[in-house]
Image (cartoon, rainbow, N blue to C red; front, side):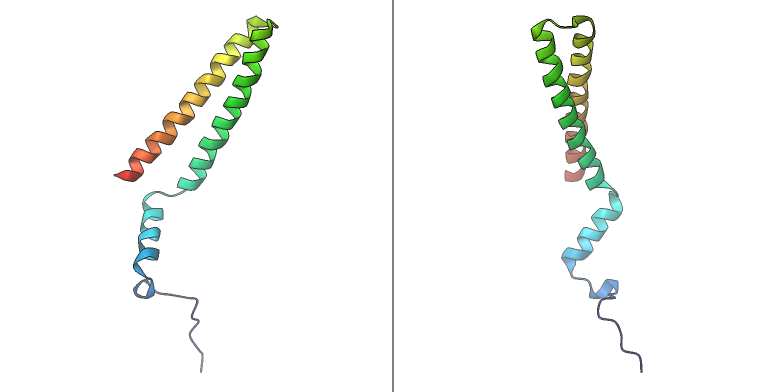
Length: 92
């Protein structure tokens, strides 16, 4: 006789915490991947802004440093906006 595998659970055997977590993942797939991308984009923007800020402070290549600094600040702002938007959507 074949013994049932205890690792395979049906929906009725899941506890309420596991069931709620699975329902949240179904509603919002790849949420952790998106949050990782937001963190990585923010870190990249901060590093770039740091470099271009000090490059412009030193007065080197201002024609390219200032637009790049503005772009990096915009990236940080966009990633921050997307992170907050994600958090607001999760709370609903």
